Length: 406
Image (cartoon, rainbow, N blue to C red; front, side, top):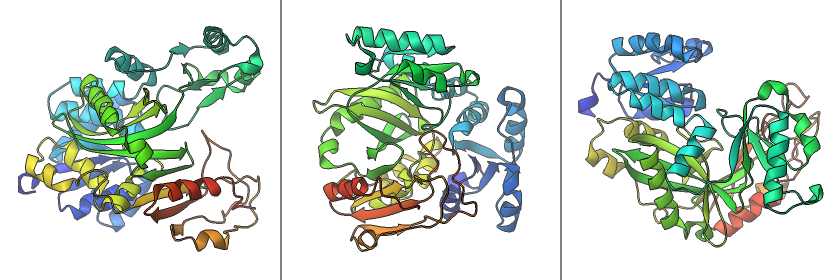
């Protein structure tokens, strides 16, 4: 840490977990975040630069000057909308314009699929849509290629924004009539064919162009439940998965930081690329990694984002994948199935299960359930930890449709 004395790490975005993690590392940092967190930062002695992450082209130089004056050495993106900002800042700090342009690939779902395809990574069929007629044509052509003549037999397509995180703005279209649910203001959009197989994500920590730790997160249901590390039935494909990750790292020229790609894999081991992000994953995945392996992935991100981190420090920080895990850490994100919440019901069988850890579900101040965005806004999470992957998957499936909110 001595070589970093006086040099600041800038966290772009607001995350208490990230702030607490870097504070424990005893290295100086500054948080660049929404102005509404200024009073909290002042009360807790957090060096803070209030910032609204808009108008990148016009204001990136201004933020760079502020951070340079503070002796900042690296910018670390916390959430999706700060990835390009971190690229713009680091490109100036390290005098390498390509850093910014590489982050653009990691923010545009269309560009990233083209880049992956050019690198020889298997992707689905995809096109860009400027209007609803483009989607109708794509849906028909995909199913003509599959010889699905009757609309009742149509394979679905997926439509999503180019630059939104997770499932925000994501539509699965099976019928021509479903296209009308998309508002004209949402265009342009990315269209892609449905990929078969089990969906999962990876969290790859990269330093000096090498993968230093690779976690595989098993999705039980996308947007609802997952656990770490993955079950043996998925981990058996780790060699193929790692090879695909290394192809991604080379193709996108990722030298430092983390990537969070999503893949699909069939029972035969055929791997298809979904998309990739360059920031902290959602779904409590970082918390699961820490529960399972005992190290802070937030600290791992800070170490990997900084070119000045010594090789010895990287090697000493990360444990061995899978075999060093203390158990399986999972969660179920709970969505109300009612329009108005009157009470919270947690069954005794759940609370008495040996894998149950805790939950943060709550009775909302406003009883009316908020409108869903993406696959929904969850109203709390139930956390589990245990030593058996099959039992972890089973309990997550058992309570997936349970009506906790009534």
